[in-house]
Image (cartoon, rainbow, N blue to C red; front, top):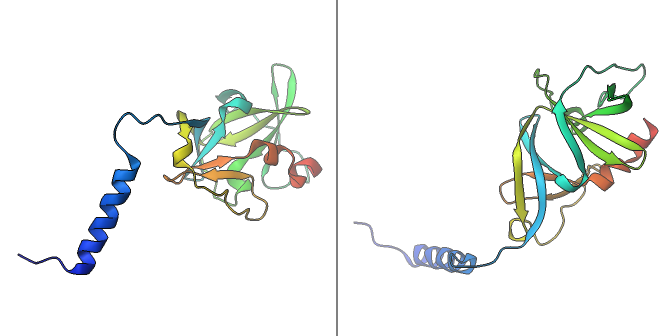
Length: 168
């Protein structure tokens, strides 16, 4: 049997202290947000439920000339024209061949459709799952936070006010 070194004991002690701080008792956790968990380019994203109007199967989308690759086109939902953004292309990921779903979010000028591969469900995101500091913005990507289990939570306000989207 191998004896533990001082270094091994120190590592185990730090792990034990971290686990003890997490607590397993009747600790009340604070819900930071409720999100729709979606699959985009093989990754998981959370779209805040508060700004989500509805989620529907992807309707037919008409591609418009001279649009950015991430702008899938326009569709009609109950008589209202809705622009459709392909989130996989927006984030520089390969889009799945699946037809997917359309997540309608509330914008100042009406609904905006976010094309996703699949909706995996809804979940609460707890404050203790989020890093203490917000993530650094990369290429002005609208990411509000990344949970410890690596789900990126979209910042809908930043997305809806993004200069590329406004010019499109």
